[in-house]
Image 1 (tube, rainbow, N blue to C red):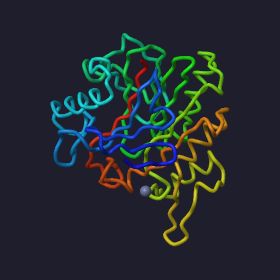
Image 2 (image 1 turned 45 degrees about the vertical axis):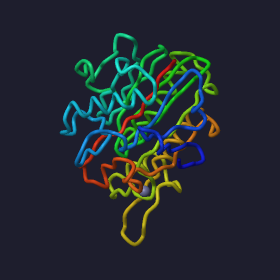
Image 3 (image 1 turned 135 degrees about the vertical axis):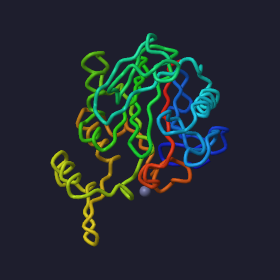
Image 4 (image 1 turned 90 degrees about the horizontal axis):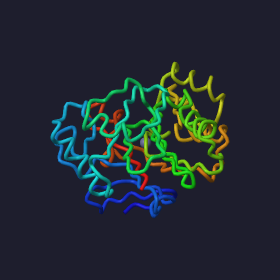
Length: 274
Ligand SMILES: [Zn+2]
């Protein structure tokens, strides 16, 4: 068990995973962020690969999902998978979407964010260095997740989720709790001039976008970028938990696209309303 400020890495579980402390004993909601440990896949996918599109055997991936469901105590039949393409479209999902992307073909073309107010659905989003954003309004029975890679971060997908919940579903901003999960950290997210310029245009010259004088490369703190977007959208800092775990530094525990140059499996973020 690794104890971080806002989260716990449970390595003793049969399916090792990360959880946010503020939600770990929540009576109405279950969540987790998986690691690469505890599954049946082999080789570059070893072992808990949750991506059907990585070249791994379908039977292995299905078994890995079953293991996560068993650990979380959620029905395998209740899974709904997103369709992430680094854009910022967010979809409200309901009972009619159950099985999407796993028990039936993925019917979406572009869904980087999903949310629901219905109980009994298990929402799943996918990662391998990109930032997982978790959203929860317990009083309003609403859960959601957004995939924020660098494009989704610059596109403000976190703000978009907040706006939908606030404007369309009338959830007060102070009732929305957010978790920023494990992803590539400021230690490892090195980008060239072109990408850096996009960030500087969006965020200005801030201390979480730094230039290393020696190698002329920029380092970007995607956690801070997403936090800033959320704070600007009206979410207070105390409503935001940050895992602050780097998937690239800890590539023995997490799949990291950058570290492996793409030879990797896929991690999953899960949320379920009881
Ligand atoms: Zn790192």
